[in-house]
Length: 449
Ligand SMILES: *Cc1c(COP(=O)(O)O)cnc(C)c1O
Image (tube, rainbow, N blue to C red):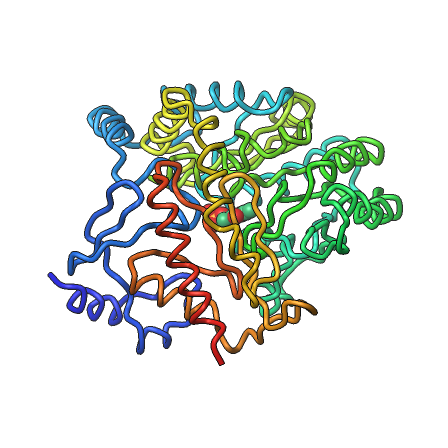
């Protein structure tokens, strides 16, 4: 088996996610034979440092021995059982441990099997809660400009990344879009906190006008990942929590990308000292092994559904692989690793090193900003550093960085003109330097002509 052989067979039968398949006429897909730590190896023996954690899911490296052992052990006992009417030890343990770790007040765990589904669950639960309480006028959702919550129709409707959304607009419910606190747009000299507070005025206005018809506000706490890794200050979330309470509107925290230590704390909401009404988790939840998601909520929501069957208040939502036993086992092993290896403290040092390794990008003549929140660092390439005029998206400058990275053995996958690092937590200081060096070369190549 070689790269060429497998990529040709692939091109004959597969349709890849988030891909213009014609691009692969020029650049074939890369078949991966094995993974080890932060490294992926293809069928020709070439290695790639996985700087994007395989789409933000991997936390403790590929083929992690501890997670592997836990899965092998569970595989001998039970692979899966339906979660309606039945349960199993990994689901119970994982729900207990997630609740213990999550912000206080979240006491119920509803499992689904991917991030978008978790968002659908949270949206439906919020709407259904108000309905069960007799508030049938609440049918809408508020979201932030430039937000991303997944690809299924409900999740897409509460997102705001035009690239993924605009084609399907005729199919989508109408969300109310509030100005984003994205601090990339702050004035020179303005702090993240000041800008985030200033931008909150727009949210306040929307809530004061629409609270009666709004079920929930949905946000990605601290980092809008798919929206080019744009970041904002925790104070925005503190204000938002307070306003949602004041206006009688739920707060949905989509921590699918930022949960499990990415922003420096276990959950991003902790930095604002808030508890959302719904907390959506996925991606890192299994350490990047298996699809799983969870929606955590509190007792008030739970009790609004808890009634005699004939009242028809139950939440009759399900996915076939909900709470899969192998996935929950991977989740438990992942949480074990956080405890065993003092991960959040060690990540503080890794974050610092990442910041150091990327600091000089700020002086690059085509970089407008280097921004960082915990284990996420982003570099914004622009056409004009002074005016911040972006490169035309058709020029696909990020693709040059991507190709250069692959040539040199680093999997960087820029979002448009934004190059970012979001590596597994097992990356070493030397690997951080290598990743930054290759990214620098890539940016230098990408900005030419
Ligand atoms: C990836 C992502 C989702 C969607 O998760 P999938 O598992 O890809 O459906 C939702 N919200 C955020 C913030 C994400 O980053």
